[in-house]
Image 1 (tube, rainbow, N blue to C red):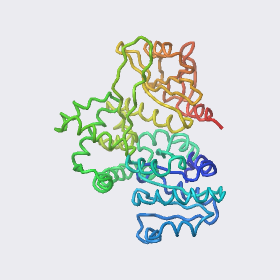
Image 2: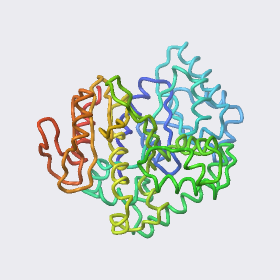
Image 3: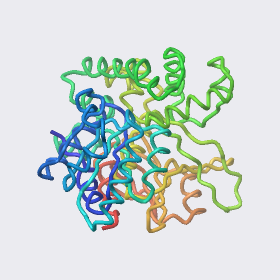
Image 4: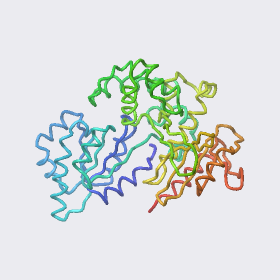
Length: 394
């Protein structure tokens, strides 16, 4: 069992907020995490709303929930029962009037704009959100004493990472892609042919870490630019694609305004590109952009709650791969390199100086931290993750 860093965060939020929602793609580990949280609360109730037997218990949801007042209730698959949010609002408000302060509701759902909008309207001020990413390098290191390269190749979906072989892992990922496109996406009311959306997803994989050009994507796919943008919005909403926005600052520079796009899980990225082994990956042009995306996702996973992320690039070529604004308003600049002997670039140093960043790092695959310039250090991913995690507010 790989312990997830989000477990103590969720438990703490349940002590502070009437309801907590964990959002993420299917098979990312939401149910396992929720069961571990529920195990800390005696008498907790778990309902899988995709199970007809469990859903039938909520024929009269207000009465059923009232009958279980005083304990934690876990609702898995809340996107299946959107009307539940209004019921929960009534129950939360009634318990507040009675002065009850107990762990109440833990909601699990596949990420979607519709789900977020529904819950935001019904449970405003009563609900805390967590996006559950895949396994990260720190979690894997703590559980296995290594495994970073396997995590990079296979991605962070637990069943993919823990598969008995690379072949078994890629077969799991290919099945996941097919099932998601054919069965999961239609559940959100989106009418997109599975073959078309897979082609679009694969096109994004070939452009990993590149600037978004919706017109070029649309032309290659044979659709209109608004349609291509709608497909991208869908994959972003489902937490399968990251759209990293550019950072704008009044520094007297001409700045790139288009976002960068990444397939969030590198295992899915590699499966879409037909890369089955580490040798396949290292010999492919996507190796550099894939490593960059892997670093970004891992750093985002450990960043303090409330941290914002961008990239920064001027028309003249000064660039920062990842710019993090911590909750205390400090800027951290991160450049990502695949080589074993990285060097800081002039463009990175110029950009960091322009923005007056507090910390600047070059992340590389090695194991030692050492200075590259007066202000910049080469640093292993795990070391920077640990440092960033310690920056979290108490």
